Image 1: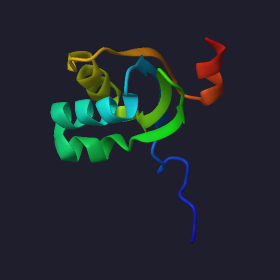
Image 2: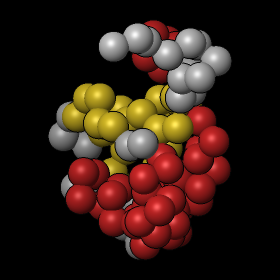
Image 3: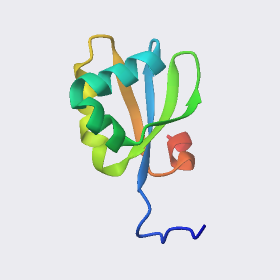
Image 4: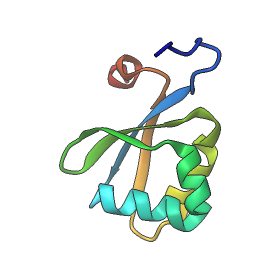
Length: 92
């Protein structure tokens, strides 16, 4: 299978988030705020999970929608940093 050209690939951003029960709450927050179609456009991937923090990967065009969905969710989910690379996320 031929790989995609760099211009055709999906651009991703990495978010460092903090909160309680992140896997369940993040997915519900995005689903409730932007729906099923928006959830599929985010291309959400879980990179790393700790007890109260996680690193997720999402599509660059959906950053604002995801952040808004996490802000209006009743349980506190805070976005600490956004970066284009995992290395840049660790620096700060």
